[in-house]
Length: 198
Image 1 (cartoon, rainbow, N blue to C red):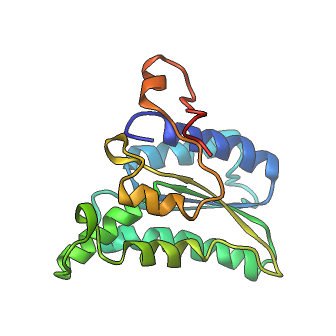
Image 2: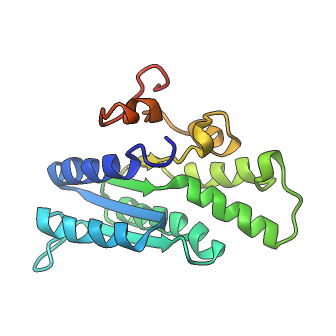
């Protein structure tokens, strides 16, 4: 969904309810997060017992803030996946991977591409958008040792589902839940649009 329709709130509720009930390993990757959101999530996880400061916790938090260079923001999504791969491949675990917000990975790649002097493609995105997204998304998979299941928040610029960044992301997802600005403006939360969701 677009800005302010409840993506982060929905992801946080999924973390609190699914990750806590699941009891397995979870990785939360905040790509382009605001410091306040990361801090709030950390303290909320302590309050709900998802993070246990006295004992074993089964959650990893990785953040790359919006004020950091694009290379750092692009790498934080890959770092979160690497941690999930470690839990899957070395610990033999089934892992839940939460990514908020995968659009910021694309945005960071676009900024890095511009800094490298590459000629942009559609709507100003990097010419390697599909490849970058494909390489990252293909790492989220099942092996003989375990699996990674991912829930990703996707910012949709100007609420345009055909924008190349979200459209490229959607091509790699098994299911999409679209949050609608029109439904959010009616005060209905979560603002799920069942007609655009797949």
